[in-house]
Length: 169
Image (cartoon, rainbow, N blue to C red):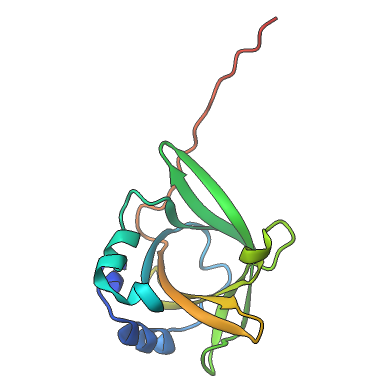
């Protein structure tokens, strides 16, 4: 079985092949909080030192959270978890090959303009393990930016923080 840590070690060409061989997940298969890792990509993300930095556990992106056909990205800042950047999920043809993918479509009214240009594509590559591409609309179509991995099996829960506020009388 492949893990997120093993995906981090793969080159972009190995991830390209793994993505092509992956299968489209059922829309109800990727539900709840997932653990995420940034993988290889374009530009600086091809360099091993950069890949190590973006996978530092101190960086805030922790994965995604999906509820039905909607989801968002999970960020952790200190003891507080936040969800930002909403997306809608649906199955569609991939922009990179002839197969189908689970699309995470960020073109949602609540997102800022730059985020609305993102279209993630997700395929299942092992039990509870998914390989995704982040693609940005550059005006002439979507362009691949990075690979990311998601796991539904690893510790993916979000912490809820309860804050009590006393109001003066």
